[in-house]
Length: 97
Image (cartoon, rainbow, N blue to C red; front, side, top):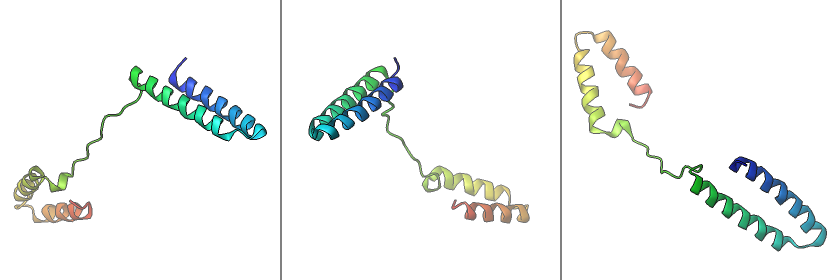
């Protein structure tokens, strides 16, 4: 059974527990059981490598020295073509670059 199948099963069980808890007035027990099951499922997903916890990295390209050099080189290469250079500068400004 896949992690997704287990999540679906836990969701079904959670709904059943909540319905039973409502009828018996035992909300705290149901919430605790759901919390424990969720933590165990998360641990299993980590152990199986099904949960990607790698931090995401965002790079601000326009703030990098490499971008400044590249932009200068491209604009310099376009110097003999003023219309193309102006169009490029306009598009870069529109894009925030």
